[in-house]
Picture (tube, rainbow over the protein chains, first blue to last red):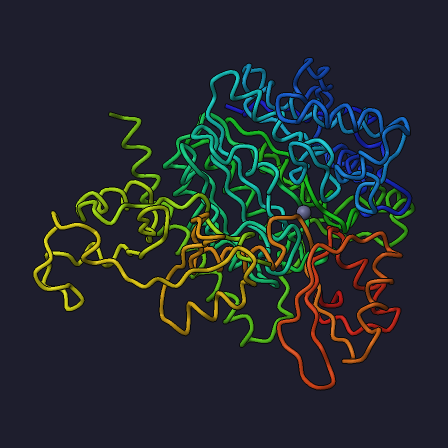
Length: 391
Length: 208
Ligand SMILES: [Zn+2]
């Protein structure tokens, strides 16, 4: 049976801007949609308009006072307070439509979750979402409201246990923080180590607290981690954690900034490695929770070069429809003008091997040790939790 | 940082006449490793989990003839070294190392107000690296000369970049290596701008 899938989209999700020349470019969503349409992967009936965000959804995961400040600051008021909440900075400049724009991002991810929970579809994607750095009362790392937390809180309110998996190059700190003590939300983040990269957290010692102890899992990776080492760490930790947790639904934050060409991070994944990750996650959803999967975007600052292709692969893995080897010439032409540079010819690219052999060996060895240690420390906690529930 | 910024407070004090077996239970319950011993409002000693655990065993450190029902007075260390809340933590750290002890009661005007342990100092070290606030890490090598850091910080402030922490892990006579944590996710943009202004930025690396 063909899986039922939905692509949550509205034009305004691609039309907002954080600022002139800002590295976060929502218009990459339109480049993705156009690519999927031109390759026949996105028939109209799979496109789903977002529902309006139910009242109280933002306040369920954000301090109500913070939401008020974002709303006011979007209209040029309470600016001094806004600065203390991380707004009006070079990362998150203020603009008139900011509150409305980031609310619509939350609505899209909420809708993707709701589509899956209600059974309208088995898998849903909201590639506009994935703003994983936003905190309860603070904007951070280009993220104002945390759409992932909004969607996960919605699932929790329906009684679903949520496994959140974050493969963005940066630590998924905002999601981990929100559910750090929650035994019904597992967060797993693979990212470039906080020793080297923003936001500076996500060490293996961060395991959750109280009832949630064991259900926060972090695999901090070396700069220049390649496909092979990333997948080795993934295979060591992710299936074991998800199986122990037994989720009702999986959320994948598929930030595309782990790619070698990303200007903001230092990992060295290729599209082959990223595609392999997406296929594994679809397989885990099928094996563990009847396929229920919500996929979002996230980082991805080689905005037209990498995210459209990466997420086309994610969508291809979700739908089972193959992506052609060569990208349509008309797509490349159209988006070359927007990007201001040539766009790639092929859907996949070759893995990088720019690292000297001795450094590659050291990187691989360290990543393996980190992944094994996380597994060694966390798996007894998982066993105990699972034991407690069945008694 | 001062001892008052890192100490654990309040400290759970015990009476010298309490039986050792009660302290064993208390150590497990509180999850701490040291207890100040207080008599008539004054700190008269300190006991560690190791002092307590070796009682009655054949461990080489065990005091011969001491039983779990004996009072704490028999095993406590005294006189006890105490710290003052206004002591600088680097001094406290050196004191703990020099005397091979794990913790000191913090005393102000003869009142016990807390306890400072090696773990508290490690926590302080972690905090001093700026971890806990979302930030990007930069390593910049500056000439060991007046004004070099000021010029760097001025350039950062022109970029609207908020400096979260500054460390100087190592220096030689000519060059000081600064590790800064800066509140931006866009570290490359900041690094490129600094490089264009002539700064020697060693992390993040230039884009290949
Ligand atoms: Zn990212």
